Amino acid sequence: MARTIVITGASDGIGAAAARQLAAKGERVVVVGHSPEKTAAVARALNAPHHVADYADLAQVRRLAAELLAAYPRIDVLANNAGGIFKTELTGDGFDRMIQVNHLAPFLLTHLLLGRLMESRAAVIQTSSIGAKMMGKLDINTFDGRTSRSFFMTYGDTKLMNQLFTAELHRRHHAQGLNAVSFHPGNIASSFPNRSYALLRLLMNSPVKHLLETSEDGGVRLAWLAEGRPGTTWQPGKYYENNEIPPDRKINAQAKDASLAAELWTRSERLLGLASAR
Image (cartoon, rainbow, N blue to C red; front, side, top):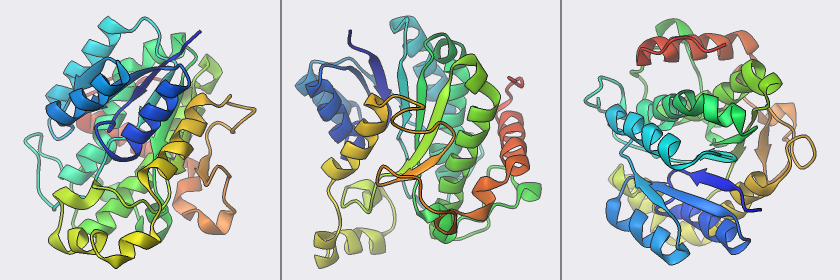
């Protein structure tokens, strides 16, 4: 029986690649993206349902959650794959755009779907990055959804948040049947930076692009987690690189801080106006 796999950020890049790969194996893929045209095109090619939401607008995230709850009695996998590198600017919700799109919006979506996910004994997958180790540094005492760091460092911060969110989601809800995991998709040549700084766009379209992996490669890693069996194929609550748990020296020390993960959860709830769900 086909499972229902919701993939955000699936209008392009590794999300679209994973959607194609999983649909080819008979899974029921739900395509979620921010571009109406591109999202519809990916879904049409797969004969799959689709939904559109711009994560820079939290009202659209709430609408997306309502649509998913109304349309799918089961959600077997939620892949929080949407994200990007953006200019340092505030959204209409008052948060740094990168922090909102990469952390607060997927946190909100997961929170709003939590009951359905637990009923379905679902897997929740977060697309993180080795950028968490290279650049991530979170001062929880000043965390307010904004940033005073460069856009590159803020990207690393958000990828660290993805790992902390995974660990705390596992701690809080694994006993209710939820399985959470985060992963680095690889050093991918994709359109991912095209909405950000000109220097990154130039780099990604230079000869260095040929040294990078493809979106299909990244899609394979996402699909491996989505179709795998938690506790057998992969260990819940962990972070993966190339389908393996990396050694401790390759993981940001803050990502292993349970108290930091708990406090990030609490502060994220507060910023989003959510009631605590333990």
